[in-house]
Image (cartoon, rainbow, N blue to C red; front, side, top):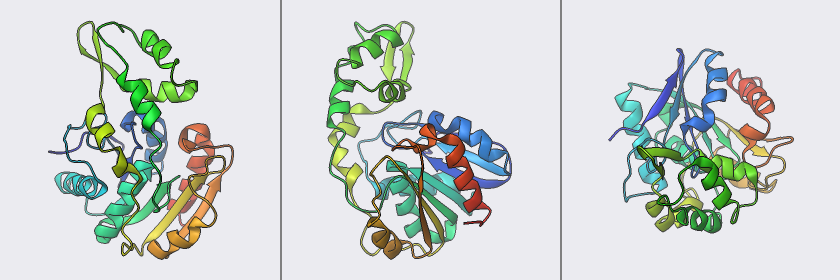
Length: 257
């Protein structure tokens, strides 16, 4: 099974992997911007997310294999690879397993370390959505507001809503598997995993997902890594400060940092 994607532009293949509970739609605006720099953008939905297939198996090793199959299917021999959060972990796994397939690696607001499970409340809130009663996006937002106070987080999650059939909403994500396998999301990169290519780690200045002391671990796995922080940005740094994010990535792609 081949992952669903949105392909924008022509040029050097550039793959973007979204984060947990996200989808390729989250990256369309920036994808168009990157395409203007001479890249063919592949905005990919990872398994159990977006419009890609649902499957009970879920791990970074498996998601790296999914990306390999995707690249083979589309005849992408060497790619620029960017991953955010969960997508960043998949990108790290892929680059260390298949280094010859990655020319440049960009990891957005995630380190190769282990993270504690912290999506429980969001997953529980999503599980309470009753689409026998909830008939509009507004009703879904109102319901989720009882559990999730941050408007931006709700809007991010509500991008998963779609019409399963006329008059009935549903969620694109495979909520059952993502809840059951949530422990996989926080797992660290294998200790012996190394990628020696050009690498950029970008952390949100207000996020906390990447700490200064993580640079030691990052450079153990990625000896050529540059680590930088984006001002005025939290974990969803590409949404919080898209202009700054684009500028940093563009400089890295042009080998100016």
